[in-house]
Image 1 (cartoon, rainbow, N blue to C red):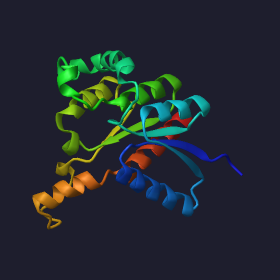
Image 2: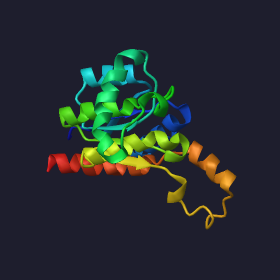
Image 3: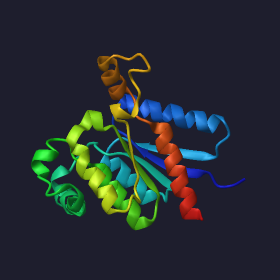
Image 4: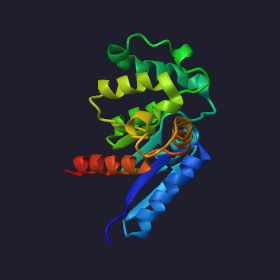
Length: 191
């Protein structure tokens, strides 16, 4: 039997994590040969990455860390690469209380040649995702960003009110698109 595809999913919000698990359980039940590990914060993700070589990573962007002070300089340094697309980033103002640790994961994945896809929804995080978009462009889109923005849905055709759309946006991420994009990146790497 072939070795299963090993994927790490990083997500801190319980309802988003539940949705990701449902998707992967569905894929496994349909016969996909995959094994998925989950992490809910930066420290847990780092520990898992130290102990296992994953075939791919699907990561939220904004999630907690227990040692934020130690990581701020690294995050600022990484996001400097985005400034040619976004202009100068006021780090303190942009990321008030919500740091983009997914960027640290993505940078690690680039260094280790592990395909990685970031997943978020701009509507929820607003302007905080602009530097992330700039960084993915600076990296030649090597780390795709799957965004769940309200403008990607034809919500009026679906008969949704704007309030229903907002609730929909808070309740879901596009894990399916994230997974499919990750598979494409893994196939590219394998050749």
